[in-house]
Image (cartoon, rainbow, N blue to C red; front, side):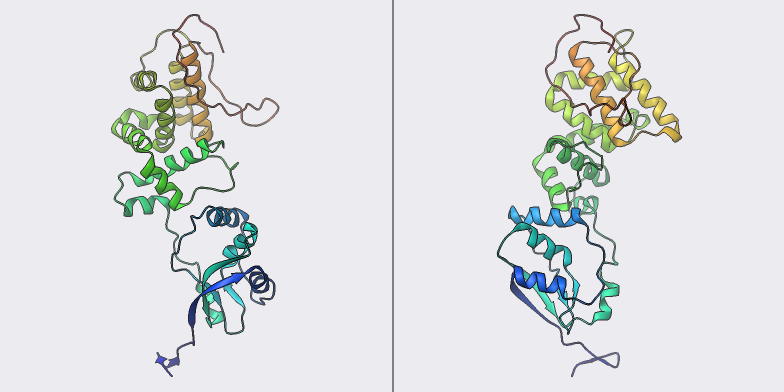
Length: 294
């Protein structure tokens, strides 16, 4: 018997196991141990990765004690059941002391920013949330809000950064111009810059330059209204706008700019009787042909 610190080491074995639906149900339903709360968002995210072939081996195992009680892995098992697949291969660890459950998942989770920094990507703490907002927006959801219950994970965020150099370029643009600091979070502005630049690079460059330099074309210029709104919101800590609100302000001003319209006071109402739909940025540029208050 192998001893460590005067105590016998547990008889732990690890195997790759083809887990059937019946096995998963048994492990989930017959356990007498108390597991942590099940988060449906995590279950759905895992299931999506399993169904799309993006599930990755990380060395993490489904853990059972010597009585067959499930100690760790309930989110993976519920996700497997959600996929409707007949079976799936999992790494399973048997014979783990049941006291070990108290120590599981107590370490600090690796964030998308950590992952980017490990890959040698600059400005990871800014780029990660910007990339996540890009994924959300292009999936048809409202960026930065809680509407989308399945948030992009580390791998999806890294894939976005690696396949979309435009989001890196936009974040670099925002970081390299100190004037943007007065308007809001660089990740939010970087995301918004990425969207407008993709729709119309020439108009976008002019739009953001005039925002930085307070260069207005006349009364009611959308850029002027946007700058006013962002500066007021930033200065009033008790009314600090959410990331979603800042993006809405930018896109409303951008759309007015593209359409050749002027604006009154820029606002966006997300709740209540006067709730507005989240604006999506448009991309067809036209010259100013008339003045119209919107």
